[in-house]
Image (cartoon, rainbow, N blue to C red; front, side, top):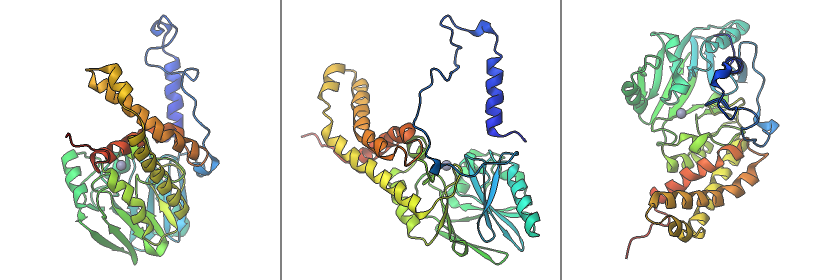
Length: 349
Ligand SMILES: [Zn+2]
């Protein structure tokens, strides 16, 4: 596919614009179709959130350090290491797809090294980061966490072959004189998400936790273990590294990005604790009576607004999309504080 995501969005828009007028409803709106006039506005993206422009084929490839490179389509990221025995690829997002090999070819040709991908390291089992794995054929050695193998066997997706080499806690991968340290430090975004450390390249890759320059995606990156995810930044910072590959959006991260991210999450946690003891539930239960779900929904919405509004104000202009996704992340953290940690849990007398 040679069109970029942006181009296909535009093409889809043009196709929608060609829908015959018979589909126009009485009020002039098309069923299921949004328009710029009715969609909400959000705060501008800080320039610091944006990365390099992609090329005509829709990707950017750049050096991280020495023979380690990263590839992005502006939304997803992968990385690769060229060695004297072949290329080690880290993740294979389907949105980058065939551009992964194009990026490898481009760098390998420029440096006179092999362009043959021999190893593919899986950060975690999710299809949005691995859905182009099968493009690299059957003879690539795939490495992932033991739980990734179980989850991929369950999902049975031909695009994501199960790993050939698995590990529980740690695995050191030696390829062509290079050393890659893989480690599992407990569940976070998913049960199988691993820390990929390249000590000689001063780089840590940890996917779907810190998305440099941006707040997390919806619901704390669709979190599967909130306490584990809250603990992840400190674990990441315990490694020596200068460059961070987060798997998303268009740029690499720094240690300062991790500091800001950790502060952002801490601010949400602190504000949720305040909301849990400050927002009065009485009016919600008084109004909705027997409809307990309505009362809980509106009460928790008030708690989320109480906790997230100051965080949105603090980080607008600092982290992109603070006004887009902070509330959904706050809700997930609120539920975790209640259910995982038992904050404000009261036993009936
Ligand atoms: Zn994921």
